[in-house]
Amino acid sequence: MVEINFLCVHKKLRSKRVAPVLIREITRRVHLEGIFQAVYTAGVVLPKPVGTCRYWHRSLNPRKLIEVKFSHLSRNMTMQRTMKLYRLPETPKTAGLRPMEKKDIPVVHQLLTRYLKQFHLTPVMSQEEVEHWFYPQENIIDTFVVENANGEVTDFLSFYTLPSTIMNHPTHKSLKAAYSFYNVHTQTPLLDLMSDALVLAKMEGEAAFICLHLSLFLPTTAQKGFDVFNALDLMENKTFLEKLKFGIGDGNLQYYLYNWKCPSMGAEKVGLVLQ
Image 1 (spheres, rainbow, N blue to C red):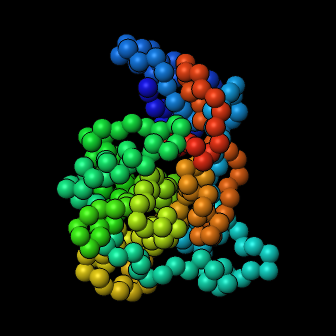
Image 2 (tube, rainbow, N blue to C red):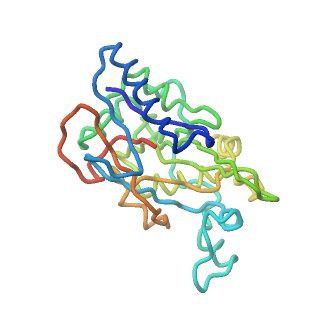
């Protein structure tokens, strides 16, 4: 099955029916490979989505988000109170949390495969695909594992980077967004794991690496990483979104299957992360 993840059309060519032409060309090419099914998402409702998810947003740098009008001050809230509301700990609290290494690929693959069996719509990844999608790459993907006292990896968290250009702002030129990817827990509560994900996302990549390997407390000046952390309400994500002060986004993300009949499912049964 083919996964349609990103389809980008130049601003000047939008609303000119370019996207259907691109889709037809993708369809032609994958048919030549003997593949006749696909999965994709869209913001619009077409006949008929197999699942509907919604993005939630967690402010990491509320001042910047308000200044660029990504968000706004709530009623009866000042900037100072808003920053205090979204303040995070200086360092992660889960013992044994560290960046994923090459040696972790087999166990991460095993943990992911076992975890995804509880959902209805999921990817089936090989060990090579896990390396491609999860092995940390700067400004692309961050993955952290939890290693217990016996040296066993029991949990992992991951998020990918998707920056946006800010137009016509005198100070800010880009918005750095982290998107929750796959998060697997067997020993660490998911709430704790995702709380640490927020802390790590707020910290600069190099600073997070130093912190986790040398157990140093970093000054706040080193914490200047992502501006916002986004997550879909699929899998088990609903269990931590409100507790970790995520705000619900506007609009839904519809999941569609091409040339494959499938009954509808709730967001909590969707185990496939797409844009």
